[in-house]
Image (cartoon, rainbow, N blue to C red; front, side, top):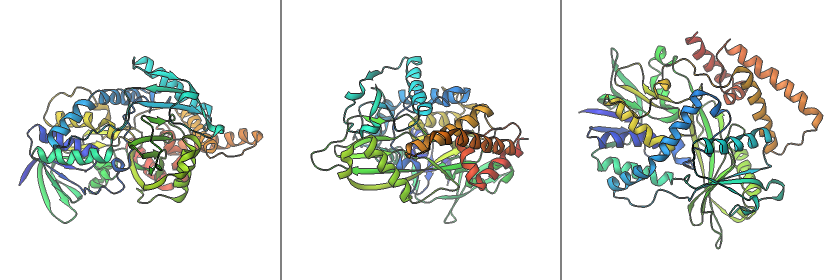
Length: 476
């Protein structure tokens, strides 16, 4: 049997693209295990937070600002998307789990990171005329923080909320089937091609499936499917796993979760500490984003301890009595230049939709429409051609600013861990790290510069350094 399209990936992006294509009348099969172990979508807090995610580094580059535009456009489409999924799936439970977002600025981090990003969030809200209100720090609802790290400032964004990611995936499955799609609960092993045309996929059980189009939306594993084509793969930004840990906490009787999302600005390469209401007494807690050499299956005790310590200290001291219902692990796909891989990939009929870092679930309706338009030869509403997968590294911060930002973020990590460093050590540490990171970047390539988080972790992991160097060499 020949399909119009095979979609590889059972996460939010893959599920959304498959549903959109099937909704347009195409014959579509989606492949990928539906248990979705360690996938980013399953462990996500699923905050529709295009403004709450803003950082000074993001809006300082042309491509970062395009990502912001993508987030804002995606936010406007979620109401209609939710209605479509409910109608097609027959499941009418509300996807939204929160009423707005509170962004708090506390003293747990570092002024050069937290305060700067908080001010950038507010400035971006004003630039886009997004409604928000400032909130007295003493009147932030629900918060009961340690006095040492109590909120100092806060703002409320009424139009930013959160999605129940588990329910979203269930609805995507049912809605896709409702539109005549087919799901194969088996992972893809390789892409099949003839000459310069993609013809289908081979599954891990040996089954061959043919189609006119193949869409790879398998998150951090996406580029593994191109191992048989090294000359193609080496010209695509390599992807790394952004390992994250989240916790579902069941509050004790008589205690309720907040109505809104509560979060800090993004800090120290991570997502900012955040909590998201799931049920009246079930709370999602997250914060971590640690680059790893390969995707991780299990949480480290140190990361769980750090997350819980932050939640008790900065959010609510009474969480000490809550029950840990689940510890979730997800792996975000992070490309070498920090920007997504969206569009046709060398072979006719082969498409990539991955590398979305922290934005994938939020952007999934937008990306579904974009990819469907591209496959059908239509003109998309937003031009994402700059994110075509086969590309030179897209620039972000300057080399000098990248070094400064890397050092600053590493310092911020120390402050969040409550390090006790004497003031006279700080200039020495600053000078030492500045030199280390500057030398590392220069040794990678004379002009291409990775984003700060990759600089920091490439210093720790040689395999990351080698993959970056190979990619840069392919475009030299």
